[in-house]
Image (tube, rainbow, N blue to C red; front, side, top):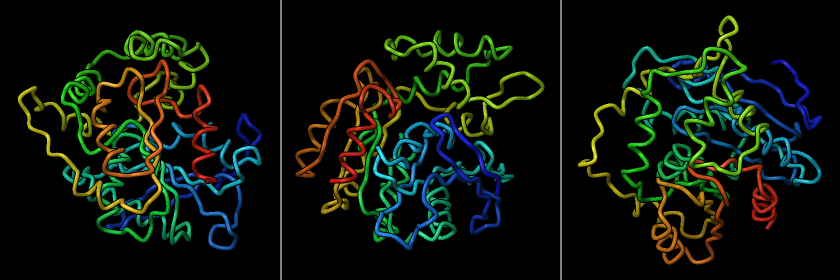
Length: 299
């Protein structure tokens, strides 16, 4: 483990541990060492399809700070993303396998129950965990994901993940991302695009490279507009009794407003929040979202 100081002057530790099949995985722990020893329920942050633990850096640092509730927070890299090992068996880039990796991470960090924040793919993993390991889940924040995935949004993800264009240097990376995603995120500032670039890319000889196994994006190449995506309403209804918040990006193409209304109908007490000026998937530390998430968790 190595210790780091982050911009918010909050310390996190890097952890390496192993999945059930022996693959080496990576996670960060922010805040208290007291997981399992104090009264604070830890928080686990699960990223999107090709994203990693760095996406949650600012949110995790806030939630681990006194202003955010001083929670122990864990952020994870799934297999094939970030600093986790790539899988030689590409078929194992699958939600059920990744859910098992989350269970392994909880065991490594000594967590018997946690609040989970799941962005996109992370929320789908939570729909699996509520069926396979329901005792782990104390509260849930779903970030721009629900039981119904809009095909147009998934096709959009397919297209930009499989586009061969990429920035040629770090100076170009923020403006490159703004060209690709700016229509869906019109309110992001230059600093936000820089931080997004730092989260998405790793450095290879001074060149930013997307920090995931390309085979993960390749899985979407066969997707067409005629695809019928199964809904997850039975899994969603298994969250009955679990406090839940859903964040939807104002310009989201993946999670519709009608789906959020139906989620609220089926899950009384659901806290539904719109992320203004953001698409899929919202950056959760911006525009007061982090305070709303902290209030929900403390509630």
